[in-house]
Image (cartoon, rainbow, N blue to C red; front, side, top):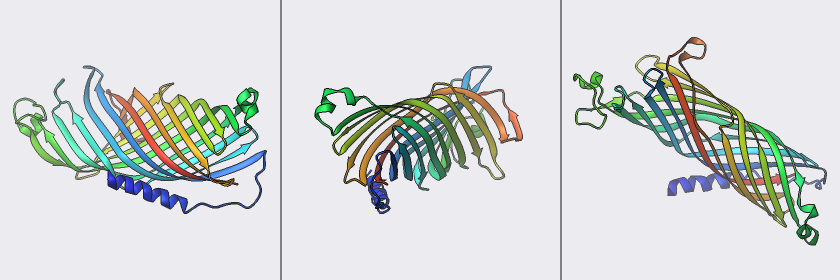
Length: 329
């Protein structure tokens, strides 16, 4: 835990080194802001394959990225009450958690379990959105008495794309299926008959594209600004490419899901204006999608792409904590 905290502090210090101040005076109608962000994320991706005949789960992969560290940049252009914003963040290629692979060769019995060290290969999270702010506080007695107080409600729409490539390495497995034990039946992975084996790893390419609609609430009191928002997605598209490695090219599987009004996001932020040009802020964000069903394919994209009889299931959740240094132009 101390090492993770140390990395996050180093990222924050690195991000503040990029601060810059523009020399012109602020325009009351047009405002441009940019910021450098440091992120700590906890992310979990889970997918499984169901037998459509027996309606039983026969395979499950759990990618638990317990500590993702990211650096990012974001900016927004504000014209009166209209705000156009965008951001991009990139994970650092480090070890980030564990991956668990489970198989049920016999209905009701988990015969195989393997555990791997999880590493980030590459990735990017990108957001592009627009919002319009209504100042509710202008008719409040508190706002009239205190000119430094403002409260806004802002409907917003954005599109996000989250792309990540993960590698599961140093894989150790416990196999109780008859193919490994050479017995006349399957046994549980934790039985005395199960064999401990060393396996090849698994690579995962995951891409989640989401359209969000929601509302944001913001309050400004002198030099302190607080924001909170709720978003729901009318449409989410998820593509996962699962590459099981072996001595040759390995085996590829594809999972495709489409979700309607399933994915949600909650966030909150607090910022302190150091001066007219610089603001330091802390934000938390939680997004999730419950288990959804989709298609399951063998093959790599459209090359030898064969749809299987099984159904795939997918779910994800992500918690992010970020520190940002904002520069106002």
